[in-house]
Length: 464
Image (cartoon, rainbow, N blue to C red; front, side, top):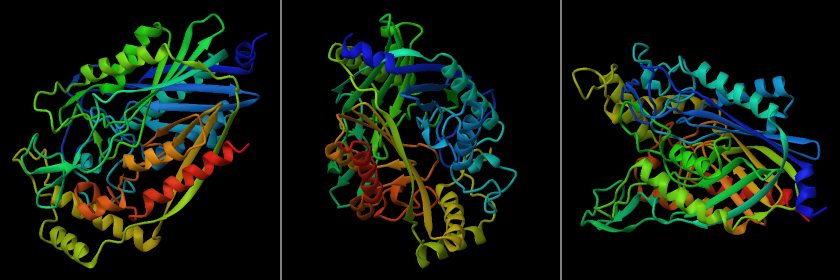
């Protein structure tokens, strides 16, 4: 018996996907202060689950084609999945793709449903839609249950490549020294791009003893924002990539995408006026790269499965006196939203930021520290790092560079939403990712703290 066959006997995998496409009229998330009821379905969105079992341990990887998930709803999924399927709660990863053409599960812009700063008659201002939450949760649990029922012996093949054609840093240093996010394409005032990208395309392919592909776990790093700010639903480039790889592997192969630290990474190239930027083309290019990588995959010979989970206490940003005075004045003078249009479908960003800042201050006064839940999984020589929010890519690159694992794949927007997590340098440059509010609530040292904790957990898992 070969080592590969031995590993296959020790490793079992099951995967499934369940349609969680919203009904017409459900609020699409991914914008600030804009009413976006669903008016068209371009392609369905899914809850995709993969169960991995090795040497008596089981872990669950759940990926949702939505924008975000709140802490409460992520905990709801973990708690119910643990009770129904006997999984350890800390072994359940709830990852969302940050799809800007889909709803949110729970709210993005406030801590609680009862935030007093947003008028009750405009619930979509909170960022979510309570009508959608049960649909997503039920779909997630159904997918996990089906994946559990599909468990079978498998072997894992892993590989990587690079693709520099589809994802770009969206922040630029201008000639006046300021930093702009999404400047005009080829603006002559652009001096240089502020930071790097991560071109890695990672592939984990689970194959049955018969040689038939069962599931694929795909890793790349980029905002899925092609649907912004429209009123149609789509799975975006992750969906197009998944579908492309499914065609390569067979109709029964379930393809999950793990999206990396893309807080400052986007699919639009601001230095290329001729770019053909759409999610179908991006999915095609990533599928093309994946096909090349599949010829280079190598078998994982050790089916070690383990994990670590930690709640890291991170200081929150305290709004300055000037910021709070500005926010109080805004809401005092405009207790109702400042509308951009007569139909009341879009609110000025300054008003929304003022309301979020007041909400943030109330929570800071209760506890200036934020409980930041992190997970790291080990599967053979693969490490999967799962963190909440939208970290900047620079820390992902450091984690990958210093990781002792043969492969390190990172998953942002996992287990809850916390807003942008920029680098210290980005705070000096500015941009809306650094604007104090619920959308950017952690102290400037947060990103480095997250990287340090991630590496510490990886080293624990890979010791010896």
